[in-house]
Image (tube, rainbow, N blue to C red):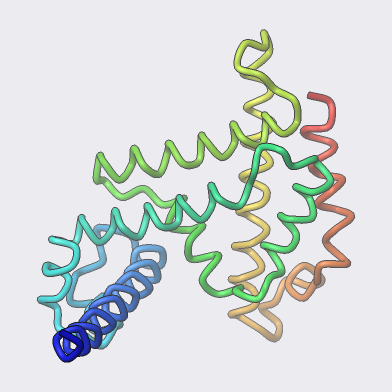
Length: 208
């Protein structure tokens, strides 16, 4: 029994590792090149694995894209709990923007922003963005039966757009470096961004 278990475990670890490699490579390719221009060969080459493994683990390019998108959606939704205050929300947004994972986070955001042409994937993408904005509006005090619900959602969606834009712009200009960097935004840290992001949230959501 113990010998059989020992034989299975390495294969399972290899499968999990391959899935993670394919998901990471897929996120980068889909975000940078778009869904239509990305091929399974591109992704397999980036991940350093056999292209047939995409079909084994995700069925198809469409299946891999949906897995990448669902992962990005889950991460975004987990980042905001309903009991946060606006001050706590501002601090969390700043930490996400300036946190220790500056490369993959903008990739996740780009993945959520780019259209794919795949109907099911588009439903996931739009539902995620809409739900995230609704959570922000709820943190600011909005309720589903409020008569000015649309105005509240608009302001929350503007916060989402601003947060995505700040993170992605910092990533692009960090990659450019030198004269291509957009200073002081590119190198601003948590201390420098905390005040402006807080002011942005209060200006858009503080009066809801």
